[in-house]
Image 1 (cartoon, rainbow, N blue to C red):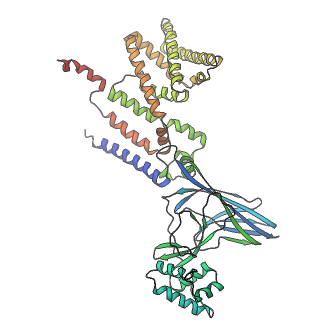
Image 2 (cartoon, rainbow, N blue to C red):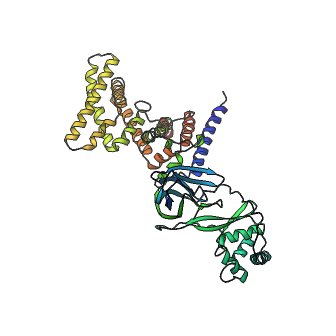
Length: 501
């Protein structure tokens, strides 16, 4: 029979698991190793205005995913106000509303932003040119001369914008520039001049991030477009490019804050930067995974803790398959060592080993007495189960009495599995002798210890919990091992006489 479908299945599982894991790392920035720290900015916006005694509505622009930053969480504090988050062609905005308000009003908005160097902004739409731009005298002549002077020294929209801004700097400022600045604000003036010259541009608002700063205001930048490309310009210095610590708060050329039913509106910002574990930093976005980004993080925390242990079982199964198929170690029960290893994770290794040996040893002594009673199998195993429960209870009480609190964790051992282990070892003792019992019992303990070391590794726990594609990779490896038909390592001892001859 052809093995091609089998190898195609194994290859598909391997490729799908690797692709899903890499996609999760790249798209959601889930780290490969535990303990990584991510930089997070917490920013609070405080809106003040004076209500006029009637209905009031406040419309404020909100930051979105952009180059270098990704929104994690958002919170507001606005007692008595209705709140809606809107998203349209103007971008993301928060809208507060109230039927009646009078006097000083205070609204809060806070956001957590993850510093993500690989994050890319959505495609920015080029603004339309302002039509019918009319300059009053004598500003029309000044604007024409400023545009012509910068146009002659430029070769593209970006260079034209740079030269135009420099003409308004202190060291190159002409009489025409001073005349225009006396009448217009700098950023709107630059946008108007650029549009008049046929260059698509708009004024956007950004926040310079500095740790521990309070009562900061937004700065205005000029966004210039050259076909599908765009670049930011500092309207004061003419420097081109976006600073690393600049957060674009409003990038569609709209007002940052609009207040209806109030006066003297103002918005100020406070910010603080801190580091936190990468897993916690990205948990919010993982909770909103789509099907292709399927995540355990979307479950309640109690179920997440349960799955964090369950997802370790395939690691233990892989260790058992390796030791039994390739090495040839004998165990008492196929996957009993995996369950014992899970118990070791709860009890710690040394406590678990001592508890396991005590329970099995006492259980074998009691089981030897039960064998003399010639009981039926079901009754005998049931008696062994009750005996194991009694032994665990006795050891727990004694350890508590002697102040050994670690002994209380012995209750994590799977009682049914222990009972069947005692039953199998007892039958094996009667049929094969104590040597075979020691071989299989020692193999089971060795396998359980190795499985415990693999499953309790922090990196393994992190990978299995955060990258479900790893389960497909483990499945493909186990399928490949299951196809092995060669000699086991321990079987090579049979050929020792041949080498001696």
